[in-house]
Image 1 (cartoon, rainbow over the protein chains, first blue to last red):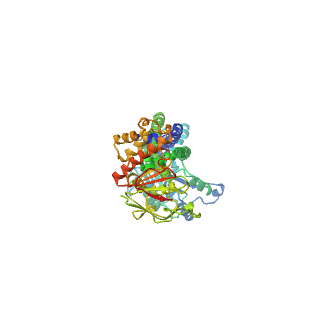
Image 2: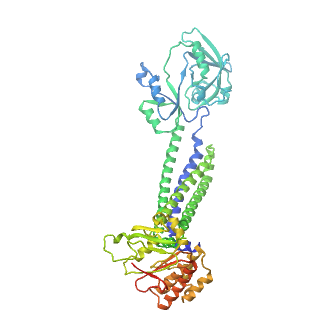
Image 3: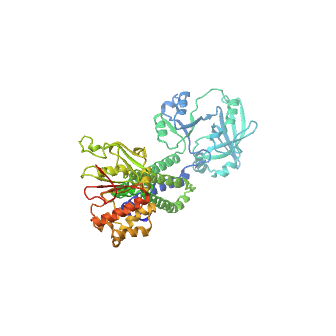
Length: 396
Length: 215
């Protein structure tokens, strides 16, 4: 009823309500803006290597002068078990290395080029390449390989220019027939295959062949000696987790491959974390501002609340004007914050698209905003209901 | 409907360690019945307002039991009480509890719209009878206490009730207005078959056929 609203809204301080709306808007805009930016920007750092997901990590032991003179850089079974038991580890697989010698040769424009090389392999489900392009079956003489992008760079800018050979693009390189010669340690057995470059990886510093081929060829040509694996591939639950860095540093291990992506995504997470924390603090403060102003307002109007209850008005009716203030102010701040995020997004999206970012969904942002706003409203409504009930008895 | 209000050995907690004069209310088995008229006389500080607050549910600092038709009021919830305040018990507090910023008319309507008990014409009639029709649209805060008392009397009958509690309702009224107020209240109570419980410290509401109780 109008008269009740008129009575109970007296002493309302528009400045305090505006103060709440402003701070709540700011807090929400920072939280939601930060979250949305993270959703939109993460694609720049993640999934940059199509062969290996960003939550995979390759580690090895640091090579020191001790290792050179007889020390072991392989991971023992105990060490493997310790790594497996870390909380941030989802699964681990060792790199298997070839137990024989490999040389690759290319014949190009009448000139032959031959080099020693090596093979390693990891289980197929760690490699993100369609099955049609990866894998090997016994009897096939073609072996797909994934090589490090660095090797191509070394060839193009280091070797080719000084040796008078043509530079080659990734596509061109993949088309060149590569002859792979596999020779056992004692030189008694030799096998020849065709190599096909299935891709280049930023993050695998190796020459990778399918696991099936590795198993078969090691059985056919190897000495049968069991060696500890010197590199491990790990799927981690949270890339960029500080615990990972601490563990690696504490055990004198190294993370192999291009680390810039992991570091950048780690940095992005840290920055977003700080921004979110600031936003949460501001939102929390705004919540208390609202709670205090409503409580103060109701305290000032306590006698009126009491008189209305004495007339027989229900507690829900008497609390309604205050509930309306809370709902309107919070929902208003929420809508303003959403609007602000969309405007902000319109400014930064073109810049991000320049960096090949795939913009993320806005749903998590909207959902988080709605949940936070609902929580603020709910807690205030509970406080209002308590205050009204408190005004029911005569003050003594 | 509440037929009777029963006091079972009731005593305000503040009186617990004091010697109180002989009373028809405290520490007795007093029963107030629907349809009767009661005049409760007391010296100030005798606990009149406390008694009204206990019956109206806004205080419960007493020893003993208060029963409405054998239901202990301590078991009532807030919404039970709000229902009772709209339907069963009307109350005119000593301090009137008018909203000073609202006009006489708005103050009365605040109650009447809740209960839809009297028509506008009936209310206008009461204002007329009590001689404050010309103050209808005055803010209550700018009226004399006597005028405010008359507004509050009209407001108190704007609801169905089985009992009407009037705490010194005519303390600032002259004898003529006292009679008119008593007639209006008596008329409404009779229409509803309700009881009138009026307190006084010396200027009682001029009811007929009342039972006098010492507090």
